[in-house]
Image (cartoon, rainbow, N blue to C red; front, side):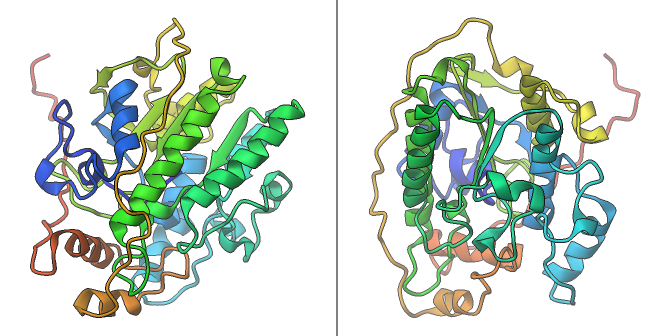
Length: 368
């Protein structure tokens, strides 16, 4: 689970895909593993997040649904007009009726392990059902902590569980560094944070692919939301990656998939029923897989930029970022933050394109 990028922001420079390189902020030089995974496994350029922001994004990603209370209250909270950020498992009223995927797993005897999802900072506490299965040595929400450190903590726990033959069937791993700190003075630059996030992702998949479980493993990667960022197709189009021996290799898949599609695919692998009408109706990602396994391991691409590069301590963007509540979970206005990131990468005088929202209307009159 990663944070807040559109397809074009990262993979817009991939010539084989439906991308716009003019909107690509974090190209192959910054995200070599996202590019390598898309190139070696499946390139998905028609994948859309169901959510608008992280408040509903984590609910959609973990429960294939954001309920009425959540959808009606987050705009008020994000707009600074009152209400507490009591989502992501904190308030029972905001939890989908059928719960989250870990509730589904526990009811059906499917083992789980959580690394950083929900319960950011572990204060307020993690959802009750998830607490016993959460690795407390894995850093929770803190944008000042590198994702490469999270990789090391995950690796230690993974290896221990593997040695004790106690690996769970479902692991949920949060890698939120690609959210970035914007242009916050003295913080790592957006490019440095995204590159570190990309390095950690590559190393996790490399480690799994070189372990004893690779022959029966699959890694799904998605963003909780796209932060209303620049994309020439739609502001909801985002990055999805899949790596496993049974994932098609060097394949370009143009099918339309959503967050709910990915949730449904995971449920099918684990033998679980749908959590909501949305994942029940979603198209599973069958077209991304093949019956014949290819056990070749993945080798992480090394990072190519300085992961410790810092933002300047002064300037207009620094001042804007200085006043943002980045220590809190997703309290930053999405459009403003997207613009700060755009200008931090492209320059203060550059103009971020307005969000694009595509509409797909079928009149019933089209010929088959």
